[in-house]
Length: 302
Image 1: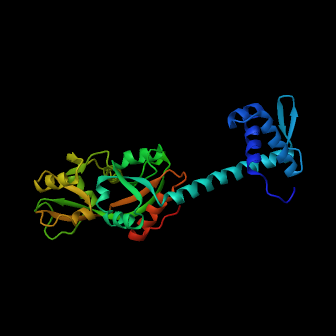
Image 2: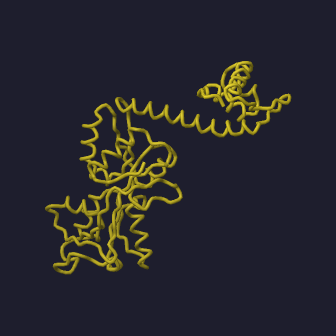
Image 3: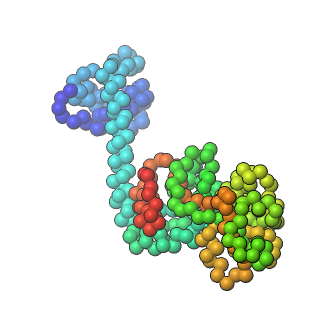
């Protein structure tokens, strides 16, 4: 093969011709004349120094060299497309947009991240799209959202990349007198004897709790469910049942007339995670992950 670099354009025309097994269809696909396609393929053969295609009427057959050039040519063109995307995205960091799917219960934890992101990338328009963890998982899997957040475990059938951001223990809270005096922890199995107030079933936290109930071998008594964590607190305060909430929300209850105990044996964790589909991540999305890493100390593989 001559030492000069292969012409990317002629390589692209050759790959398209082989893919479609037709000079005519390749010309239509590329909006060129058939004679131009033929000329560029012959030019590629001259550059390689070997015949790539055997033309027998309308039938095209790859030579051994042609197969090698076709295989590596596809890889080279894919790399060129990737390069173009990354260059475009790098430029877009100066001016662009990013939408992150985030459940309402999680967004209260990300105020410092939002502040840092906007300070570092003032020209990127950042939108937080609120939805339940399960809906965000579906939207990310469908390509409607590039990146989102959920509470683990994520739906395994969606085949999402999940990277844990933070983990917090679950606490039980109830009106005074519900738990034994001076108690600071509560075995998980003790929840079988108590009426519970939970988030609705489309919340990932409730999905996780139901898995733990099943593993512990009991069906909980659910007094009420709500889509708002502050309603759970209100119902617990009114004596309707025991609410189960992650530790960060317990710290926000200063002044509430409630008893709180940490769930143990086993300790149930509220694990917050980033999710994406495994496809190419834009530089804006990577920038978001990096800011999260800097602020929260979480390492991301991407």
